[in-house]
Image 1 (cartoon, helix red, strand yellow):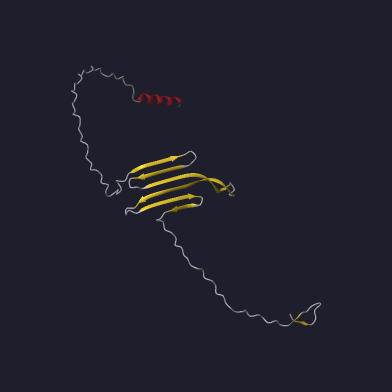
Image 2: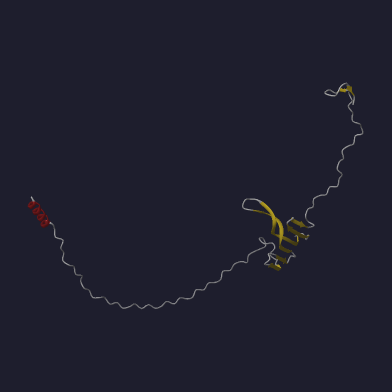
Length: 198
């Protein structure tokens, strides 16, 4: 049987097509010779662009105060936290403001939420402003802002009306209140005997 298997393998190997091919050799060609082309460099004229013409913006509608300019301005910041600044405009509007740090009574909270009152640093501010309305009315406003709050002053600010009147007085009645009559009563208990009047 072994002989039969070996004979079958040899028969299959002999019947298989051969994969042997001879080595391929590429044909040799002579390298072609080309002359380099000669191009003349083109002459381009520099482009000329005219600047676009834009119409000047019209501010009449959008900015009715185009003629107002700032005539003076100052701003000073100091290392101690104080500052002052001011400006003035060509329409006579002015504003000045100054700020100073001050110790104030404040509330501090610890990590447990307990409140303690102690001195804290806070800002106090004061200033003034002056302007003229389009109708020609002149306004001056001064203010102070500190631990007492914001306190503006100006003749144009509304003032609460002061009412002068007398508080009503309850009427006085001229009569005597009735008195209950004294009635006889009897005391009872240890040590008391008989009828008595009070």
